[in-house]
Length: 285
Image (cartoon, rainbow, N blue to C red):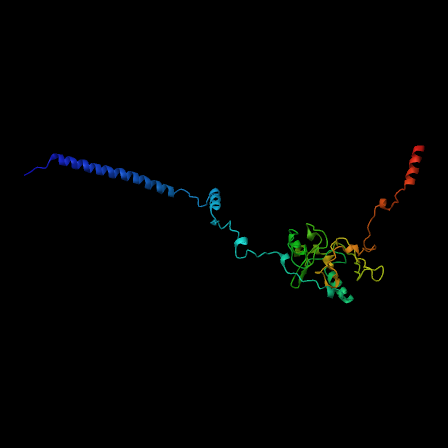
């Protein structure tokens, strides 16, 4: 019987040890890589491309970059990109100049009655016939700044300069809505017998074909197109709305617009002879 060589077992042990050592070292390094990848998964990762990288991509090619929902401009790129919500874009009726030349006295009188129904007296600020927010004048100027017409409703253009507090003069027609406990405030403090003047139908003329004078005061009525423009009441519209300088032909009535002139403007300027006389008199003293 042949006995195995003792060197064979020694070689086999060295081979087995080498294989085991190689497997152990490989497993150690592979475990380190796996552990590192798991740690990186727990760290926060930025999903937004840095601005410098986005700029570099845009310069290199024309590929559009995806933006976040908050940065998406739907008014520019959406389905309603060309839609604008602005009251001044409403189509306005064209003025009928032919019909305005045939306004009757009855139509003018009806227009004055309708105008006076929203005023306490002639010349008073008109009341507001609809609900209004009283926090600012922006809501008022949205319609009454340019003056617009929507179907059968007309928002007349304001006749004076823009002020920040519209409700200081213009109050709601339905009242301010005081509670029952404050009903005593609705009663007038004292009675009065004030009666407003009756508005004139027409202004006076210097001769039959002369332009009529303005039959009312011009205080807070600097913009004549507010009542006499294309959006004014039919009986008060002018047949020539294209002319912009109204007071060039229509003068104010002296009995309604009483201006206070400076006394210096009424003095006659001193002539050269008067100035010389005054100088000689001063030298003699």
